[in-house]
Image (cartoon, rainbow over all chains, first blue to last red; front, side, top):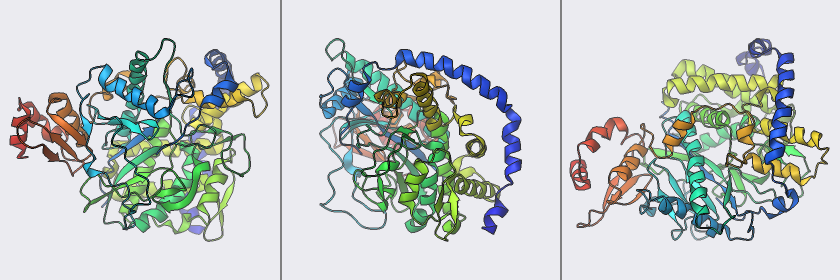
Length: 63
Length: 497
């Protein structure tokens, strides 16, 4: 256990680096808006007959 | 000293014909591969794979499996060598694209992406020989959601002098935990009798039952011992890694190849003492980690302590950083290794603070974001088949249908670079010689495989040019030679073959 703590950099130091790039709150809002737009697009391309489609996709054999 | 981590990925694609789902997958795969090599009149159309070098029953632990192994190689099925150095063929019931061997993780990622170009071209060519309105569709994934799995295998060149037992103990904890960043995500569980889950990190975790073994289709092992170096067997081994998922994400693919290359180089340099990362029960740990979306679950270590997957990954990362300082990154290519370390740290930090922050990098996070978003939007119950469609379609490689192409994933290559890589070989390995020979003298190349090219000059017996050194036959070494030869006979004469 002690060896691990020695070699691992303190969590604070790492978090500092990650947070420095994008403010989390802003990123959250943007993600949500992006997601709504993305889901609209996906609804359009998603296979329609889901049940039949999933049932018919069977893969035997491999590797 | 760690040797260069030459590497590459082989992908078996899921395949079906949506309008005729009962169609035989072997026939579909043959039709698809044939359509690519013949329909588009490619120079390599007649070049067959040479099976001289195939020994899938050889075990890295030092023995050979005889008659009890099913034949892995089906020589009657279509099998082609491409001008980019790849192999494109029918493996059992799937089309398989085996990218050429590459000098580093970045190049191997590019050539893996080029496989999608090959498969898209093949789908387009196949459409012409199918009844109107029908098409063959392939998926870059590893499971049909009904308990059937197919592989995405990585290959790494290793120094044969390193005892295989040492490799095994040092890579198992790494392979069990790397799914936190290279898992492709899966809706549901396929573990017979196992606890149910709505979503898990890995496509493949449900299918692994052993720690070490030769099998790839039954009782799959975390460490596969197939011993076919496809190179000088006195110097090299090829670590055949079968536990990975097919990653639509460029960065996840890059990280999978890059971090694994570094860990293997560290093992060769003797700095990867596995004592502190040794798992008490690797198979149960693999499943626990795959089902823990919070990334906070701990698994039991051999020393009795408990650690999380991220904690174990951090230890590998910290050791890698130290190793880079003490030994350098030449074995994984300096610039590439530096990028791997930076991205590895960034992804572990991001996962630790908020997995959703990695939705542009990590496939399971990107997929889960779509699954959760659509589930909430349409008030779907956990068993809704639409959730499985989202999973499947995430791996669709058709631009009109693919969800991963819409998910906002960071890309590492231009479209142009990927398209070029579908026909041009990598310059830094023997794949260059293989690919160039096919481009220059397609009529004279009778067959090829990973470690030789066989010429038929029409007069003498066939002549084999051996390529037992993966780093010989590079552009630097053979470009002048190839440019100076106008006929294949001249080339062979100058090679002394």
